[in-house]
Length: 294
Image (cartoon, rainbow, N blue to C red):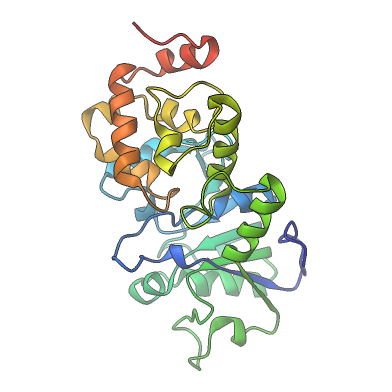
């Protein structure tokens, strides 16, 4: 299968994408759990559901900050706005939603076995029922392992074996192929990140800063970083009173996207926000003119 093909593999197949980082790492930390979304978004997968807590770890305010509610009262979608390059749509599927209420052209659920076993909303079961009822045309499930199972099946076999048609892909394999195809020799070690958004930022860093980044945190060193690198999108979003009032908001915003170096990334962002006085318009002016604040 070509690396670019993930949508439209088979219209009668559920697509499983294995990404171990949807679960906690060996140290018990959960970071980078949405790292596959920039790739999936680029492939045309725009609609997502995952636990709301993943957008507010350490900071309850972050959930309301990063999501913008639709103007339509009947619309079930929120739009993610912390990263302007991929404003994906997000919906919450909770206890109150019935299978009959679920109708999507396509949707991607990001989950893991712990979420499935701890939850009582039976989200995966509802999505599969809607899919089998032809209420969902394309269903994608990103989970931490290929043995992912749900409690609603009679047997204890992996869910992909329970379904008549399922395709299983590895995000790690796809991401490595994509990065090598798009960027040639990676400008960040693949062992540090498989988020294609960060690899794109690393390429821009090389072109604009005339050197390679040494680590992920270099991409967020905004007190020396020049305009033209996509990580400025996140910094501009974080220039706000919410960040001024609570540094946990910074951590909660960046945590889903980076797999490591989070302490240094957070420190770099916090220091630069002080320079820009947490003011979004000042950041925008610098991005347009290259003139730093006095």
